[in-house]
Image 1 (spheres, one colour):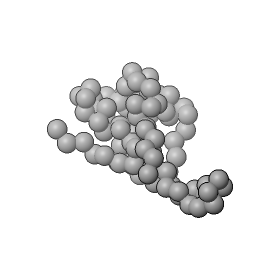
Image 2 (cartoon, rainbow, N blue to C red):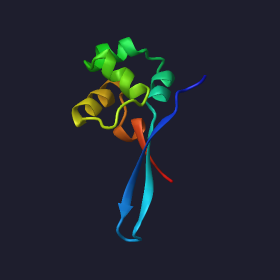
Image 3 (cartoon, one colour):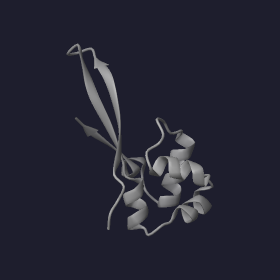
Image 4 (cartoon, rainbow, N blue to C red):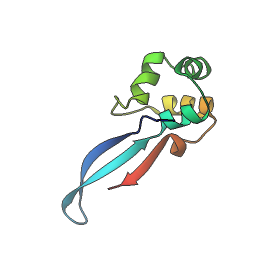
Length: 90
């Protein structure tokens, strides 16, 4: 089974070493939905989120996510925030 693997990439200034570093947040929503055999319509029904919001997150078209949205995803998928988004150092 193929999953849509995405990650947010952000550069920040590290004051300790006075250089820019790359921070990646890996988005595992596609993998989780695949493992649970959950379609976007079902996730929408359980979470109360709009289909557009779910699609935006699924395809990594967002730059931020609210705690309320993350809470609804965690509830619907019966998982933790770390299961959905994972910090991956460069």
